[in-house]
Structure formats: structure tokens, C-alpha cells
Amino acid sequence: MTQLATVVNVMIASPSDIPSSRDAVERALRSWNSTNTPGRGFVLHPLRWETDSVPMLGHHPQAILNEQLLAKADIVIALFGSRVGSETPNSISGTVEEIEGAVESGKPVHLYFSEAPHPADVDLVQLQALRDFRAELQKRGLYGGFENEDELLTKVWSAIEMDLRDIVRPLHTTPSGPVPSVERFLVQGQSEREPKVDGKGRVRHETRRRVEVTNRGHDDVYDVVLEAASDGMLLPGWDQPRTVHAGQKQSAGYWLHMGGGAPRVRLKWIENGESHSKEYDI
Image (tube, rainbow, N blue to C red):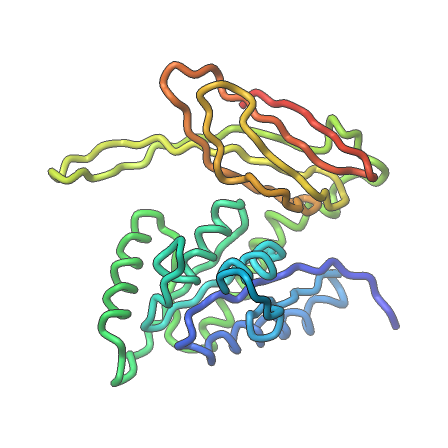
């Protein structure tokens, strides 16, 4: 018997030292499918570089993975053991670049560190880099830990349930029928103040600003471009067309120069084969 289902792409990101944990996450996703897909209509599809990437020449391997996997992911599960991973042109490691890219795009990221004993031949340089990265994350409260694969399975299930409530549910609550283009997107500005410690140990506060774009329709929207539409505004995080899935929220950070006007953005997209553009005060 056939059944229609919504596919949720879950990217499994990690350095190469914990393959069994990567396998455990995939087992958790497939186990969730076996239990929940028939009654709930969702299929969790694991995205892994080992099985879902296509070899290409001419670009850095991480850029290829970002395009082929990260861009398609709805959720990212990131794991660390005793290595932070190999450096890329843009980050201390490929996994860290994937995490930051997902966060910048507004995708849910669930990050877990293995609490199991490190191997006897652990790379001490890699281990220290990982500890430094973990210490930096403590300021953001973004991660958890696991001691074994059974605990990891439980935590992955819990994270998926939260994401399905907060992200995928709008697919089923949006009224049927075409959504007028002026109502297609909700575009809002957000800001928050974060404490920073300067070189003299003094605490300063820095304002981080971002613009959030939510697709309120029941169809994916393609070739979405977000750009600054006011003087003194720098919006570097969204300079390439992307897809915003139905019900999904994506975000990009922005900066304001002194003397600039009120922040305003321009959103461009393709819908039903037609080009659309709309400006928003944020």
C-alpha cells in the first residue's frame, strides 16, 4: 500500500573519528521512521557525505558538501569525539563550517560531544582544538553530550520531535489553495545583546542583528535572494539564490554603519515561473 509522506532531510555532520556514532544517528532516524511514518506521514532522510555526495573537481571538498548536503538539510545533527576535524579555507574544520552555516541559515542544529574515554593514540593537537571549540560554545549554550549510542539515540529522537513541532508542523496548518505573493513570506528583524570580554578582561556588550525569512505557504519557494535595500546596511550572508521550504524559517546576520538609514531589505523569488520582489522594513 502506497502512502504520501513529507521528507525531512537530516544531515549527520562529524569529523572522521566517530563512524560508529554516525551510524547510530542513522539507525535512530530509521528506527523513528519505522515507528512513526505510517501514522504521522513524515520520513526522516539521513544525509551523509559517504552516501549522498557526488565527487566533483574544481572546488574545495567542503564547498561541494555545503552545496550538495548542507543546502538540502532541514535539520543538522553534529557529533564530536576527540577531533575537531580538518581545517577548511573558511573555518577551523569542515564540521564547524557546516554547523555555522546551518545556524546562519536558521536551520535547527543539535550538537553532541562524546563523553566516552578517548583512544590511547588520540591526537593531542586535535583534542585541544576541540576543547577550545567546546569552551567557546559554552557562551552560546548549543550542545549536549552522550556516553553511549543508546543515549545518543534517545537524544536524537527527542531533538527530532522538537523540530517537527516547531518547524514542520506549519506544513499541515497552512490553509489549502494558492497563497498570494504579498503574504508568501514573513520577514522580520531580530537583535540581541551578547557579552564579550576584551583583551583587558572587561565585559562589553555587542549587538547581533539578523533578519528572519519565513515561508508561510504550503509549497517550497526557489531562487530566493535577500539583499540590503537601505544605505549603511551590510547583509553578507545571503548572496546566492536558495530554496526556502514550506513552513521553514531561514535567517541571515546583518550590520549597520553609523549614519545609515533604517534597515530595509529586498526579497526576490520565483513562484509559478514568475519573478517577484518585495521590500520590507525590519
